[in-house]
Length: 334
Image 1 (tube, rainbow, N blue to C red):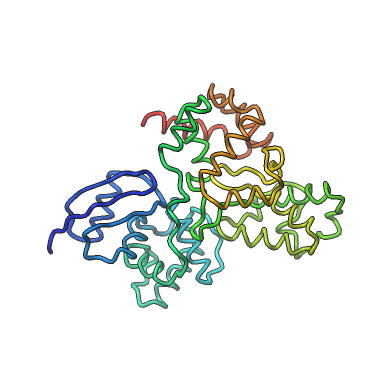
Image 2 (image 1 turned 180 degrees about the vertical axis):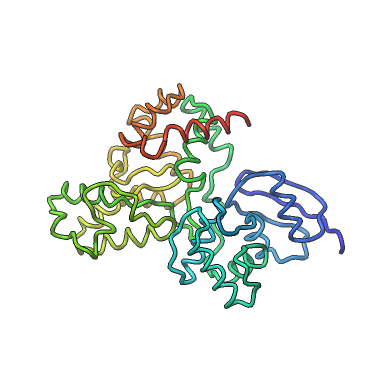
């Protein structure tokens, strides 16, 4: 097989790799030996393989049953958009395995449940949405400048970014990452003089409930289905406002109900800014840190104190402080 010279530029972190490789599989293998960067976009120069194919495939590693990785989220999002009713998460579950095998069977692939180069290629070929716009992404320099502006350690900023959104503020369909909270929606309706009990039934219980539960989380693009379902419970503008206020948005998962306190005109203005790029997510994060007295805790790496202010009194339920400490330890070694 002929050798080719490939130049791989990661446009998110402005990193460049030059190496001699023989085929597409080796491109992926060489790249992942050098970096652990997920869900970024790349440009490939001087290659005989189609750019469209490699831009989308090179960041995806081999996945199979029981794999737990950020790439599984992307896999689930694509399968869901292609009509498979699966829960979107970073875990390669049995239902994901069944969906993959069905997809492989219908598309003339080897039916083994393993998502390798060929399966990724066909998945992206069938998925007609555009590649994520790379100008939406944060660069390393953005995080460095932010850390300097707020007198924070870069590793601490990266830790929060990772735990809140796996370092990715946008979904594969270019919408900001969100998580809809039905118990917050309950409270937001009450704030607007609306009795949530009047709308609580078997059809709405997955988006409207009085107490926190993770039972109804769907993850990824399916959280927008929940958001839209909440909005559609009533055609009153109050419902849209309450629903948008009840989701956490972007790279740092800031709740919509903070909008006015952070200086936005209203929650719609906040959401419109979150839709622009991750730079706007970072600005909102800075505003939140200042308004909620989080800076001292983050500077001192007081993870429990920071977690309580940022994630709420129930932060221990998901070990939020422990996850932050672990992520910080990882980034502080780099």
